[in-house]
Amino acid sequence: MRKCAGAFLVLMLFATVGLCTVASANSGYFHVNREFYPYYPSLVRWNKSHAPFTAPEVCKDCHPKQYEEWTGSLHALAFQDPLYQGELNKTYKFGGQQVARQCNGCHSPAGMVTGEIKGPGIADLSSLALAGVSCDICHSISGTTHLETPSHEPENGSFILSPGVDSENGISLIKRGPWKPGKDCGGGFHECTVSPLHLSADLCAGCHQVYHYSDHFPLETTYLEWKHGAYAQKGILCQDCHMVDLKTFIKSADDYRKPLRSEYRHYFNGANYLIYYLAEQAALKAGNVKKAAILKDKYQMAIKRLQLAADLSISPVYRDGKLEEIKVEVKNIRAGHNLPTSLTNVRQMWLELTALDGTGKVLFTSGTLDARGHLPKNTRIFDSEGRGDQFHFFLNRWVVTSFTKNETIPPKGYKDVYYGINVPAGVKQVTIKARLRYRQADPVVAEDVLSAVPASINLEQTYGITNTPAMPVVDMVVKQAVFGSTRP
Ligand code: HEC
Ligand code: HEC
Ligand code: HEC
Ligand code: HEC
Ligand code: HEC
Image (cartoon, rainbow, N blue to C red):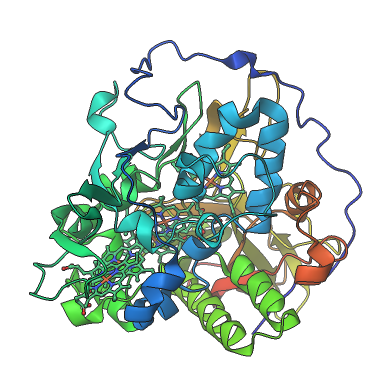
C-alpha cells in the first residue's frame, strides 16, 4: 500500500544554505582534550594495530543469517543514503573535512578513521567504507569515550573501535558479542570476547545522540529521550524493539517483556520507509531481485512499526450545552523515545481533521495537503523548529543551535489538541474524521537535499528519480466519531 501525495515540481528552494561561515566555531563550555579525541568533532577513538577492519561480505561466509538481516537496513545504507550524501556534500562545502568527519564518524566510522573518505560521493571507495554501519563497526566496539567530556553523556560517536591486536604470529582479529564464547568461536578467523556493552543501550547511544559540531546543541536526542522514559526504567532497550520482528516488538512495548535470545534479528528497522523504497527501486534497476525483495519487506515493516506506534481518541467539548470544540488525544503508545524522534525538525507527523455535517458538507478542515503537497498554516504538527543565529532553518545541522519549539510526544505520553468549530444552526450531528499522518520530510526540503547529491551518484540512473520525488505519506492512525451538536 503506497499512499502518495502526488508528484510535483518545487521551484523555490531554501536559498539560505551556506550563508553562514565556519566562524560559529567554539562552544563556550564544551571543552575537550583534542589529543584524546583525534577525530574531533567526532568523539570516535581507534585502537590502531595492524589488524584491519573487515568488510561485511567476509562475515557473511560464516554468519549468513545476520548478513541477510542487516542487508538493506538503514545501517547498511547509512553512507550511501542519497539524502545523507546530499547533506554531506553541503557539509563539505561549508566546513570541509574538519566538520564532515563528524558526520562520517557515525555514518561510516571505518571509512572515516582510516582516512579513506576524503570528500562527498561514493566513487572509488572500498566495500567496507560504503557499508556504513557494518558488522565490524558494532562488533569491534570495545568501550566508550563519553566520560572524558564535560557532559559525560554518549554522543557524536563516543566509542572505541578495536578490530584486533598485533600478536606474536601477526595479528588477531577480536569480535565482541553478547554471549560467553564457545570453544570454537570465530572458526579460526577471529577470537571472541564477551561484551556486556552489547547488551546495553550504550552501544547505540554514541551514534543516536547528535550534537551541533561546535556549539554542542542537542540536535537529535533519541537516546536521552529513551533514558528518561518508561522503557529504560523497565529495562527495555533499543535492541528489544529494533532488533526483533513486529510481534516481538509489540510484546516488548506493551508488556515490557524482554525478548528471548532466539528472537533477536539484525533488522535495525525504524520508521524510514522512504529510503527502503528508494533502495528497492535501485535494486530492481540493477536487476537484483533478491535484494529488492528484502528491501520490500523492510519497507513494509517500517510502515507497520509506524502504524503500531501511535493511537488517537476523539471527544467533544460542550459549553452551555453546545458543541464548541473537538479534542483529539494523540498518544505515543509504542515508541521507546519521543514520537517522532531524531530529526524532529525535518520529519513530519501531523493531524488531519475534517468535520462534516449530516449531508457530508465540510464544516472545518485542518492539516489537509494541498495539490502540491504543502501543509496549510493551521496544521497541528508534532515537530521541533530549528533556529540558527540569524534565520530559521529546517535541516542544516551546522546551523541549528536551538529549537524554538518541540512538540514531540514522550514515550507512553500524549498531547491534547483542541479544534474550535462553529456548528451552523440546524445541524444536528457532526462527523469528525481524524488521521495521524507521517512523512520523512516536506517535499521542498527533500528537493533541496537531493539537488545537492554529488555527481558520483546518478539519481536517475540508480533510483529512477528525475525531478522532485513525491513524498509518500503514511496514515499511522485513522479514526472517526459522530457527536450531537448539543449535549446529549
Ligand atoms: C548496530 C550494531 C550491530 C551491527 C551493525 C551488527 N551487529 Fe551483530 N549484534 C549486535 C548486537 C547488539 C547483538 C546482540 C543481540 C543479539 O543477540 O542478536 C549482536 C549479535 C550478533 C551475533 C551473535 C549471535 C546472535 O545473533 O545473537 C553475531 C554472530 C553477530 N551479531 C554478527 C553480526 C554480523 C555478521 C553483522 C553484519 C552483517 C552484524 N552482526 C552487524 C549489534 C550489531
Ligand atoms: C552522532 C552520530 C551522528 C552524527 C555526528 C551525524 N549523524 Fe546523521 N544521522 C545519525 C542517525 C542515528 C540518523 C538516523 C536518524 C533518523 O532516522 O531519524 C541520521 C540521519 C541523517 C540524515 C537523514 C537521512 C534520511 O534518509 O532521512 C541525514 C541527511 C544525515 N543524518 C546527515 C548528517 C550530516 C550531514 C552530518 C554531519 C553534519 C551528520 N548526519 C552527523 C547519526 C549521526
Ligand atoms: C570463518 C568463519 C567466521 C568468519 C569469517 C566470521 N566469524 Fe564470527 N563466529 C564464527 C563462529 C564459528 C562463531 C561461534 C558462534 C556462532 O556459530 O555463531 C562466531 C561468533 C561470532 C560472534 C558472537 C560472539 C559472542 O560470543 O557473542 C560475533 C559477534 C561474530 N562472530 C562476529 C563476526 C564478525 C563481525 C565477522 C566479520 C568481521 C565475523 N564474525 C566473521 C565464525 C566466523
Ligand atoms: C556507528 C554508529 C551507529 C551505531 C553504533 C548504531 N547506529 Fe543506528 N543508525 C546510525 C545511522 C548513521 C543511522 C541512519 C542512517 C541513515 O538514515 O542514512 C542509523 C539508523 C538506525 C535505525 C533506523 C532509523 C530509521 O529512520 O528507520 C534504527 C532503528 C537504528 N539505527 C537502531 C540502532 C540500534 C538499536 C543500535 C544499537 C544496537 C544502533 N542503531 C547503533 C548509526 C549507528
Ligand atoms: C518500546 C519500543 C522501542 C524502544 C525501546 C526504542 N524504540 Fe526506536 N522506535 C520505535 C518505534 C515504534 C519507532 C517508529 C516511530 C518513531 O519514529 O518514533 C521507532 C523509531 C526509531 C528511529 C527512527 C526515527 C526516524 O526519524 O526515522 C530511530 C533512529 C530509533 N527508533 C532509534 C532507537 C534507539 C537508538 C533506541 C534506544 C535508545 C530506541 N529506538 C528505542 C520503538 C522503540
